[in-house]
Length: 121
Image (cartoon, rainbow, N blue to C red; front, side):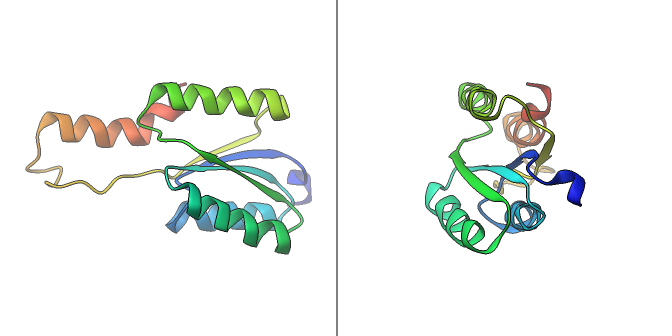
């Protein structure tokens, strides 16, 4: 993993679960991670922990990946701060009722948009 030292990563859904774990692991290997999620408090907690214990660094960024303007703003931040992005891990997700099997087309669009939108921008 030394080849990733000081490289830039974006992790969506970084406030909890798999996204948080991935962000933690990447910083332990020396990466600079833009950790994004809707919950700014959890992102700041992640940064506090990782920035003390890791050779890399977390840059918390509040972003709702269902909102295209927020996504574009986040990528603008990354470009201005770092000039490039080496790795993108899309771990954002939503838990919505009703289930995808019984929900409306709008429920399906929101779920798919959360998972896929950031990949195409």
